[in-house]
Amino acid sequence: MALSGLYRIKNKDRSAKRVKTCLRLLMHLSLYSLFFIPLVSCGHQTQETVIAEDSLVWYPGRTFSYKLKFNDLQSKQHEVASRIGLSRPPKDRDDAASMRKQLVEIKTNENYIVDSLTHSVPYLIPSAARELEAIGAEWADILSRNGLPHYQFYVTSVLRTQEDIKFLQKSGNINSVTQSCHCYGTTFDLAYMRYNKVTRSRMYMHEDNLKLVLGQVLLNHQRAGKIFVKYEAKQSCFHITVRE
Image (tube, rainbow, N blue to C red):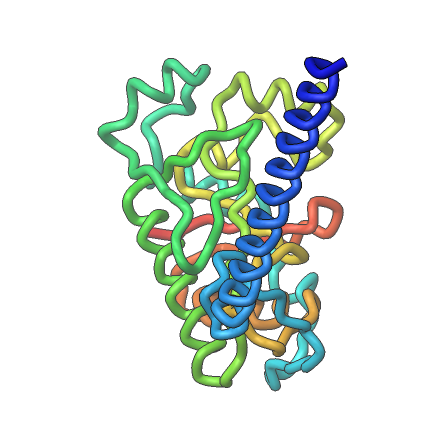
């Protein structure tokens, strides 16, 4: 009985110690919370704050008919592309890789995003790559001068091989022709209904208005004789071929 009583006393002591340990942990956690909450409120949190976009802003440019203004025929674009572009259309991706010395790789930057290309590769002849950069720079300038938030537009198609063309035709793409300007590294497509907002602010713009900004840039370059442009409604893109 004495041993049994001693065993119960020891168990009670252990239980009491466990309770004290738990209480100490709770006190430490409470103190930690008191110190941690002010740090978060002072802007030291690691997660980004979500900003509500509730201020719609507009580019005040004049609207125009994209279909009428951007109607440069495929035949006209192809004549220029075959004259100033690659000496021949690449047969497949390996063949395109062998022509890299004639091409410039285009990459996502602050003004545009090179989309996940499935039927083309991100290469252009040097003059086309410079033109894409110039379009991006003027796009950014118009947004900045008008006090608008900065967005990136999307490059959705670039250099295609003959093998890419066949895959597109099998998929039912009606704008995919055998004699494509995209096969010469002179041509790229820009989506007109997809944009990525870069500026973190309450201001935002509608896709239709951003389309007007991009359309104005392309119209300026078309009028300057730098590019041909075809408005492709079913593909939701501007089809652009550099002229020199």
